Image (cartoon, rainbow, N blue to C red; front, side, top):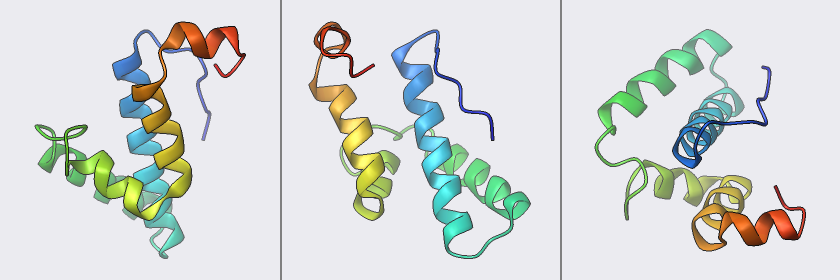
Length: 89
């Protein structure tokens, strides 16, 4: 999978991260790449109105992936300007 490092918006980056880590979870539990992509697409569509809210899909993925939790919630807590100053972006 090609990992893009430039996004047009924070929202686009956050959705990409959500997709990437959900798919990674499905592959880690034994699904094929194709089945993982299908399940990821279905789950994101089913939760499209609650991707980043409290108890939303990102919250659920953050419970099972510490790496995702650290990345995504750092984005919400730490302003982009500060992250760039400290070379975190």
